Image (cartoon, rainbow, N blue to C red; front, side, top):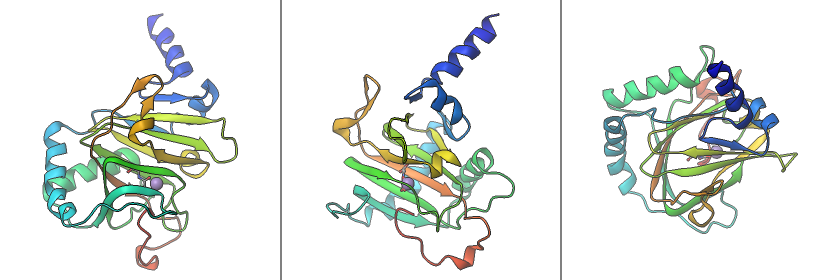
Length: 221
Ligand code: OGA
Ligand code: MN
């Protein structure tokens, strides 16, 4: 049966925007590290980037903090959105979060310049819950996940513009994630040249915490 052959291939190698160190890790993280290419239409991408641009332009790109996870970036936390953008964020919420999850009240917007990158890190467990969902605008990039205890276990996600990625549970807690710098930006053999990239990141609140309790989360959560 053609259908089951295709299913078997998919199970072994994952869809073409997810690569991994082996079939076991691909299988194990199938529902925990998810990419949905084409989640946004071009019009929606423009709606978001046009709305974000004035906020971002007021800030300067930051570099060279020796201990920082992110280089060549500017960012903002946004809690008030146009109706069109609210509708998009609502779709993200429905696609990525469960009914029992509460989201952080503001959305994290990160603008990486073409030579900007994010070093491996795990988002703070104090400030973020089990799920992280990010929209990628403007430039493709590669996100790499590496198991914090077993560095031979890894996944690469190809994040094309207008895609949504979701990291949850084990992918969020047991693996570091990073966005590769331009020189290292390959998805397997495939070169993925980096331009300016904006990400719009929604996160769940840690369980058992109410929104007012957290104070101000640090920049990279
Ligand atoms: C972060 C992060 C990923 C992205 O800000 O903690 O990992 O998609 N961002 O920009
Ligand atoms: Mn992160």
